[in-house]
Every structure is written in structure tokens, then in C-alpha cells.
Image (tube, each protein chain N blue to C red):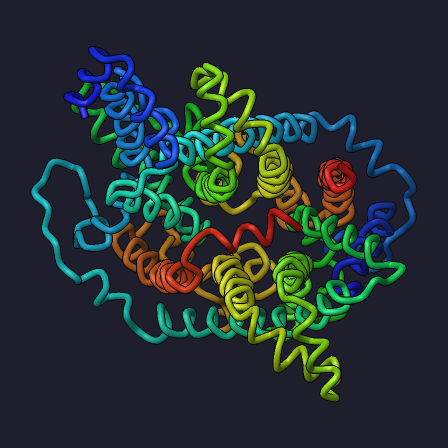
Amino acid sequence: MSALSATNTLRPDAQAPAESAAVTGGRFHITSPRATMAKVSAYGVLALVAVFFITPLLWLVLASLEPRAEVGSGAPLVLSFSNFAKILNWSETFLPLINSAIQSGATAAITVVVSLFAAYPLSRYQMRFRRPFLYVVLFTTGLPLTAVLVPVYGAFARFDLIDNVPAVIVFMTATSLPFGIWLMKGFMDGVPLDLEQAAWVDGASWVDSLRRIVAPLMMPGIAFIAIFTFAVQWGNFYVPFILLSSNNKLPASVAVYQFFSEEGGIEFGQLAAFSVIYTLPIVGLWLVLSRFLRGQFSFSGAVKG
Amino acid sequence: MGLFFAGPIIYSVFIGFTNKALTGAGALHPKWVGLANYKELFSDPLFIHSLELTLIFVVGSAIIGQNTLGFLIALVERGKNSVVTATLNAVIISAWVMPELVAGFCWYAYLYQGGTLDIFLHHLGLSEDWLYTTPMLAVVIANVWRGTAFSMLVYSAGLSEVPTDLLECAKVDGAGQIAMLRRVIIPLLRRSIVTNLMLITLQTLGDFVLIFTMTAGGPGEASQTTPLYIYQQALQLYDISYGTAISIVLLIIGALFSLVYIKLIKVEDQL
């Protein structure tokens, strides 16, 4: 790169073609004799950012593997899986994870089905209340959930629904629906109407065409909404923390608290091990999803509305 | 959805005007107290303090931190497709997709006295409990760490749609990098910027878990943003009606932001 830049400085006429090549290659800024500097500083910035982002993650992994949980204390690292061995039992890890899977899975499934049916008329028909309804959906997407939860707690207590898992799932679905409908409409708008019209001519009802044509064509979008909802609810701490109370119903997000002992001490190693086990499924799901989608298309649905 | 979303809000507007509590006289027979909760609220120094902290948290971590850093990373990474950027993206995105509680815990373990950073700084002769001396800075940095991925993804999606021939034209006309950024890229990204700013503002406004895990609002009230104050009043001190009144104020603030956002999108649609 530096050799090329030097040549360019010596022969200004050679710069123009080099430049346009660089521009069409998408690198609109690395074209001058300062290219090497620019490149070095760009990678320098990226390296700093990488350090900032990776240190806490690295700590988590090391702490989970260090039986004495004294990472960085200067003592040589001893790596073992003893922390994992200690927590891998039914009541501390498996049951909370199963609870999480049931609650987030049910929420994601109901959200996908309901938002599919809600988005269909919004995307396909010109109705009088379409725009206002969309704005209401967008508006509720923005409301801070934390602010709704205190009155919801009051209502749950009033109707004796505290510690009732189905009621919690219904509430979590209600909170995921606005964003789900919004995204679903965005994806559905991308499915051409002609295909459906062909099916209608052949005598299909709108439910048929939704099920047989629209839904399969927007599978990536549906997968995105399902996994997004699942991930959000998997990490949801506040709702189950407040609305559930029995130990055997708590999801992993709340069960983390079992590692904070009554004396105020924290079992750092076990907590880190638990966090790793609890985080891995979600990171895995996102990796699968990003492979599946191959790009940033998932966000175009959200941004374009 | 209507039942579960609008219901509680209407119900809460109602109990905001009563003296309902989970214990004591207010528990069985809540009385109508009119605007008393709200009068108390606006003369409550702790509430005003919590609003100020929420403002610092939103502006510092979302609008300045996540937004700028996300934009810069997207810009620097644009057009580069190497192992370095792919790895970096994977790390940034895992910070975002990991449960917020785990993120908070990571930062707690990293910053508390005796934690990782402390041990490193100890070798330099410094010892500091960052969560005690600079709790707001600590939660702001942690939230930048956690949330930057979202802005980065929005902006790299936006940047990938900026046509290269436009940049080429600007280049031919002699535009420098700064001019290109200001006159071409940022105007083209207007919609992404508005969307991103609104979404992260609203998200950060109601954030509870991260601060709760790291400092629980402390020491004292030094990092008690409004969501934490609501939690303390309603669910620790069992003053449901007062907590609800604060919730309503927070909801109104969120609603105002939402309305501005919808307004901006409407204007864009008509263009």
C-alpha cells in the first residue's frame, strides 16, 4: 500500500484511475498519500474498540473456569470445569433454563402467530383506520415497560394472578406484540401482491394465501421476529422478577440471584459459569439467524417501516 | 393486547389519584386523593434528582455514547471485510445479545473494589471502587458497551445503501472526507439517524436491569434513575399509588418522545 501511495505522489496523473477504482471498491477515503496513515489509524481505532468490548467478556469466561474466582489477582491461572460441575444440577441450572425456554418459547410462538394475523390486513388492505392503528402500534413500541409494570403488578395482585405462569406469558406477549406487528408488516410489504391474487383466482381464501404463500415467502422475517422475541424474553429479568415468586417457576434470568448468598458474598465462579451457560443458547441462536439471513436485511424491515 | 396494555395504563391513571398501598390503611380501601400524589411528586427532591440522573444516563450513554460509537464503527468498517472486522462485530454483537443481567454482572465484577480493573490499577498504585466514587460514569460506560451494537447495525445497514457514485461525484468535485461526511453521508442517513436516536432513547429511558445489577441505584441515591426510584417506592416501600404516579410521569415523557418520532416519520413519508 505504501509503495502504491508513493508512486501516486510522484505521478499525480496516475491518481485519478486509482481513485475511482478505490471509490467503486467502496473505500471512499483511502486514496491519498496519507492512505497508510489512515489505514493504520482506522485499525488502531478498531483495536481500541475491540479491547474495550472484549475485556469484560474475557473476564466472564476466565472467571467461570477459575475454581478460586480470583482472576487477575496475580496468582497463576488454574483452569478447570469445577464451577460448571458444581452448578450443573436440576434445581440450580436445568429447571430455571427449562422455565426460561417454556416462557420465552411460548411468548415467541404466540407473538409470531398473532402478529402474522394482525399484520396481514395492515399490509394488504387500505382501511380507514390503518394509519392511525399503525401509529398506535409504533407509539406503544416506544413506551417504557418499566413504567407499565407497577400498575400491572397492582392489577395482577388485585386479580390474584401473581405467580401464575400463563398470565405472565400473556403479559410478555402483549409487550412483544407492538414491535412484532411493526416488523411483520414491514416484511409482509415486501411480498408481492400478484402472487396472492393468482391464488385467489384459483379459489384460495385469504387464510389459505397467508398460510401457503405469504408466510413461506417471508420465512426469514418470521424467523427473525421469533428469535428476536425469544431472545428478549430469555433476557427479561424485570417481569418475572416482579410477577413470579415460587422458586420452581423462576426463569434463569431471576434464578441468577441464588448465587448471591445471604451473607452478601457472591459465588463469582459459579455465577460466571451459570452466566456462560445461560448466555450461550442466545448467542448461538443469533449466529444461526445471521447465517440464515446473510446480511442486514433484518434491520431494513425495522427502519423502513 | 389492548386489554393487557391499555388496561393497566387506564387502571394506573386511576390509582395514581388514590392512596392505594400494599400494606396499611391504603391497602384495603384506597381513597380518592386527587392530585395529592402529583403535588408531592413535583416537590420531592429525590424524584427531581432521579429525573436528572435519567437525563444524564440517556444523553451520556445512548445519544452520545452508543450513537456516536456505533456510527464511527460502522463508518470505519465500511467496505472492509476482513477477519478483524468480522471478529470485532461478533464481539460487539455478543455484548448486545447477552442477557442484560449478565452484562450488568460482568461490569459489576469488572469495576467493584477488588474487581479486575482494580487489581490491574493496583499495580499502578491506584485503588478505587468505581461503583462507589463514579457510579453514574460506570453505568453509562456499561450501557455504551451493551447497546452500541444496535446503532452499529442500523448505521451499517444505512451506509450500505449510500450509492458509491454519489461519493465519487463528491470526490471529483473536490470534497474532503469531512465535507463528504457532512454534506453527503449524513443527509442521506437522516432517516436511519432519526430512527436510531428515538429507539435507543426510549430503550434507555426505561432501563432498569443494568443499573439495578451494578449499583442498585446507590450509593445512596447517586445512580437512582427514575425506573429505580419507581421500583423502590412501589415495590420496596409498597407505596403503589405513589410509584404509579411516577410511572405515569415516565410514561408521559416516553410518549412525548414517541410522538416526536412519529411526527418526524410522517414528515419523511410526505416528502
